Amino acid sequence: MAEACDTLLSLDQVAPSSQCTIRRLHGHGPTRQRLLDLGFQPGREIRVLRNAPLNDPLEVQVGDTFIALRRAEARHVEICND
Image (cartoon, rainbow, N blue to C red):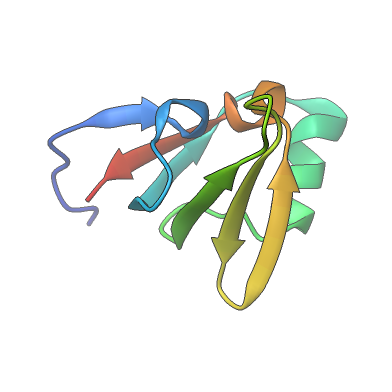
């Protein structure tokens, strides 16, 4: 069973250098499928590395993969901030 989480946020609300756990994906269709294809799966730990100069996109690390993700897409990822 999933462990309790103190703070639930969407990925676009997390500050750089934060490590968090994916709780669930919102949305549907191509956006959801793209996130799943990139490795954004519930229970997986990710790390927010940095924001681009104009604050969009943000760079995250999922496992050994580095991904640039638009904030509009990051809003579909619900995370538990560790």
